[in-house]
Image 1 (cartoon, rainbow over the protein chains, first blue to last red):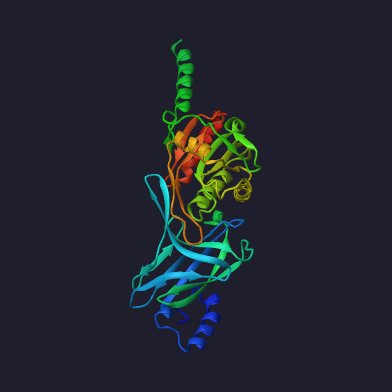
Image 2: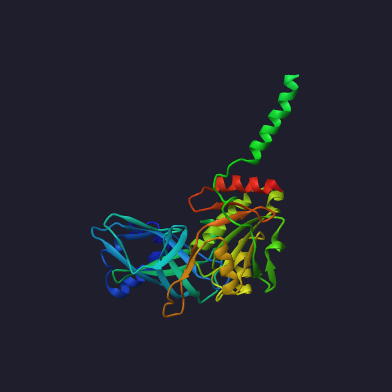
Length: 151
Length: 193
């Protein structure tokens, strides 16, 4: 588990251990899933933020990301930006499936988490705890708050 | 005699060559009208295109509730402006024209564009004023159905239009154009004076 979580380990371990104690056991699949490069792009004011990260499915079977939650925001949605005929489109996404052994990137101008209505002031350099919902199992991830200029 | 004639001719040919240098991004000199608008600035004051003459002007149509593409586009131009000399930077500005005036009040826009740097200005207006502008540049925008929280997505043009200091159309930037190409074209228009 430690290895599989390598990148996110520092932030994730205490919460995950807490969850493990609560649940009695950690889902075998979730332990093979690691998230890295988690960034939350924010601007001043109450404009929505965008979350970007890489999620690696080190397990033997497909996993499905169905949502995300954070105490720092009223709501988080899965979104995808697309460009078509010179128009920038965005739409909500129900879920994202990641095949066994695959890494999926939530990246600028593509899939992203849309963070809406921040409940506490946040600035560049802050960290935000987010729980990803993977096949009904919570996966805690720490996002670094960054400026869109750093992306 | 021939030699003396040839040099000025060569120099003239070079100058013409320079002036006609092709843009690396998309040339819109012949296909877009000059920059004209009557909108409202971040202080709630009337903003007319004439007030923004004198600098190379980039125009982008977007909205502040857009989390991904809009801030990335503005941040991209902020980083391109960073490559310019101080004198060049003084001669360039970028206007974010909101296609979501309902949520983008002058105050919201001012705070938003301020985050990108002093070259950025947000303009808004009523729907008629904005439509006059989007029709003029033949771009579309559309609203998605609001969700249960009342939030809605706006689909909008991803292009950035560049005008010279007199408001004449010059080039258009799309996502695939490289920053180096945009920078070269920008410098060329700034050099027009």
